[in-house]
Image (cartoon, helix red, strand yellow):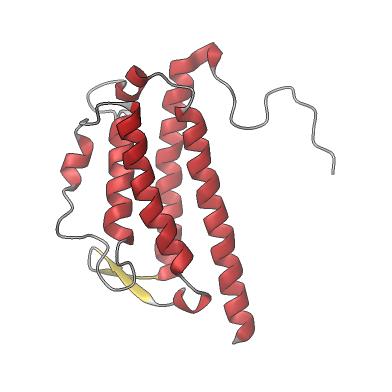
Length: 173
């Protein structure tokens, strides 16, 4: 049993590190933008960065507040409102972004290895805690990818890469 707890804690350490890296990548993309960029969308069916941030934060606040004890889809969440661009500035966007991530990461950090196989509900559907975490890894990666893609398109040649630049020599180790 002790080994299972160690494996569980290692899993939590790894996913928390991965989520923090995901958050940092999006933030490095956002740092490259001007305030008016956050409202850009390709067309009326596409989401702007503000909408993506509102949705991610709304999801985090709903699903990860009282995570182990109540359904992730809280009755006070108005998901449709998350898809209406109502953010006024980059400062407001970052406040909303950080509020969601704080709730989410605090909930993850409060978990123990023994929690990973507990059952939680999301929209009345049972998930193990580990399954819920992995579901969010997929969901948040998808949306961070959208943020980075939009930012990269808007910055074009002025884009500063978030990873290894093309033509860089291979890392020897």
